[in-house]
Length: 89
Image 1 (cartoon, rainbow, N blue to C red):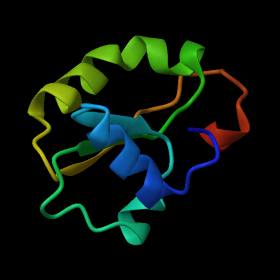
Image 2: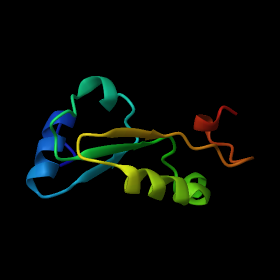
Image 3: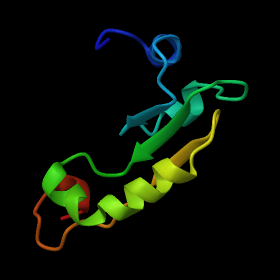
Image 4: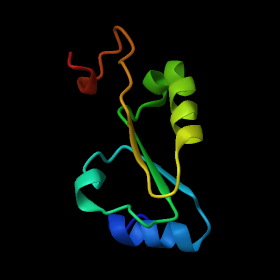
């Protein structure tokens, strides 16, 4: 599925029975209409596990609150001193 565009990926995921897509692609909000879809989208603000790990409860809460056709961005604070460029250092 790594060669599918976002719309194709959503259709393939729904067809295969997935009810949620977790991604870091914030552009999906502007590229896809989720109304009427069976799948929910949860977008994470961080993609590196060491930075994400302390905030797992926020991700779990977003997943649990998701509904078919919903789009949720989980903005996660960076881990202090992580040195990752995505953290504004």
